[in-house]
Figure 1: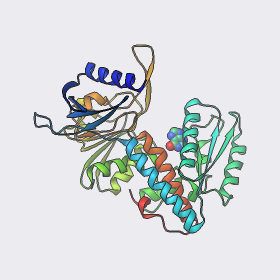
Figure 2: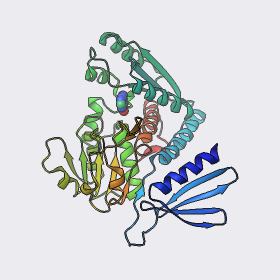
Figure 3: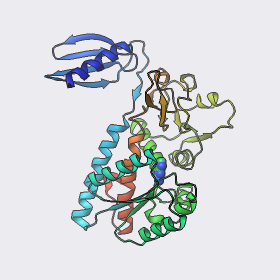
Figure 4: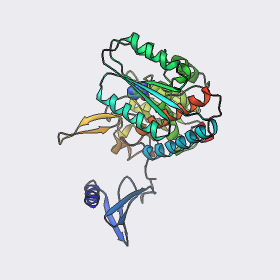
Amino acid sequence: MEELNSYRIIRSLARSGFEIFHEKGKMLLIFSKYFSVVHVWLIPNRYNIGIVNRTQSSGRKMTTVIDGKAFAVGLRKKIGDSVSSLINEHNIKPALAVVLVGEDPASQVYVRNKGKQTLEAGMDSIEHKLPVDTSEEDLLSLVDQLNNDPKINGILVQLPLPKQIDESRVINTISVEKDVDGFHIENVGKLSIGEESLVPCTPAGCIMLLKDHLGSLSGKNAVVVGRSNIVGKPVSMLLLKESCTVTITHSRTQDLPSVCREADILIAAVGVPEMIKGEWVKPGAVVIDVGINRVSTDEGKTKLVGDVDFKAAMEVAGAATPVPGGVGPMTIACLLRNTVIAACRQHNVEIPEAIKSF
Ligand code: GUN
């Protein structure tokens, strides 16, 4: 079965324009226009596929696919190690409470994944599932109870909430110290004046991937497409903190393609499938795609795409995050990191070095 699937992968790579170049001993080399070479290791009953970036024969540096999934695995390992040392050295086991109101299928998946990864990192996970007709008063009273529970270090209320509930009232009722989403107005304010705070997870993930790829971001022109409170605004604040020159764009921005073409760092967080075209990308730019959009395919199925036309961007950019497998996996990893940080601050314990900075 494994072998059959691997054959399918190679066949579909060949159909998508990859050139099968060389068979040498136990290694098959496939060249493509995106990556210089795809290595396929032939192991009995199984092919292992790896991608290597290299300079194209034309001289243009090959575009790097930023592997957020692999980065998140590494970050979660560091978080797991930090949790072990907190338990062993300080008898502190961080705990995250997640509240889900209603039965939105996407929210249910997110909440399940958050719970699973919290437990895998060695922390306690507490889930509260409330019916869709829960009153604002009842939700606020649960938040209050969690605020006052010393065993709980982080609280996340999954958004969106049903229409009878005022989201901002709920967010601002969560204790600032336990607000692992970083959405509380006080954490937003602290971020904007550069004070220590809990930082929103997806924006933190974007900065980690950027710094991992570029090193210092200082002096770079960063363009953010989208001005949401969850991504656009906080990621802009973080880029500013990294000494980027930041432009925030939105639906009223004039000549958006030209503005985007000025970006050394282009962050797409707009929620419109493949809105950002290849011609909008400055050659060599780093493109971070925060969009997760489900679209229909010609075969009557559905697939996930980002806000960037990935294939076209790969022709121009220096590096880009794919969807899925780019920014997405970073969000939960950063949520776990925030939970450990919150637990350390609440207990007056030093934050483990491995997860302290981005
Ligand atoms: N819904 C979609 N993304 C998020 C998130 O990052 N935090 C919360 N609380 N709800 C969400």
